[in-house]
Image (tube, rainbow, N blue to C red):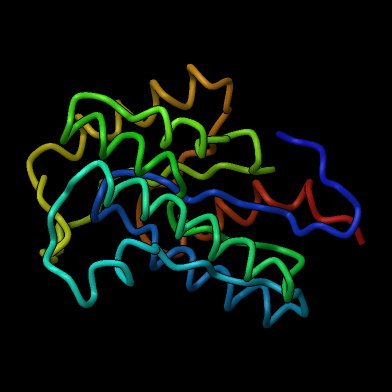
Length: 183
C-alpha cells in the first residue's frame, strides 16, 4: 500500500478480467460510502466513453488514448472526493495491449504506475458472463485473471481479491479499505 498524501484522496484500483463485476462493485461501493457520509467518487471505465461514438477497433494508439483518458478522469474526480474508486486502471490497458498486440508500447508503460493506488481490488470472474460489445473473451476469463495476478505480483502490489455474490464482494472490499480510513 502507498502512503497517502495530505489533501489527496484515497485511490482504489478495481481491476480484473472482463465481466468480473468491477463496475457493479465500484458503483455500489461509492453509493455505500456516500451513504455513510464519505466523499466517494466512482471513476467509470473510460474505454466505454471512448468507444461510445467510434467503432471498436483495438490499435495501440487507441489503447494509449484510453489509458490517458482514464488517468484524466481520475484527476478530475479527485477534486470532489476523499475516496476515489477507479473502475479499471492503466493496468487493464497494459494487459489488453499485451493480449491484442503482444506488447505494451513505451508510451503506455510510461502511464502505468500501479503504486499510485493505496488499495488494489482484484475481481474474480466467478459470476456469470454478461455479453457486451466491448467484451471478447468469455472462455478466457480465468486465463486473464492469472495475467492480472502475475502483473500485480511483478509490480509488488498485494491485491485484495473479491469473489462471490455482490454483497460478499462489497463487504470484502470495504473491510480492506477500513485501515486506510482515518477519522
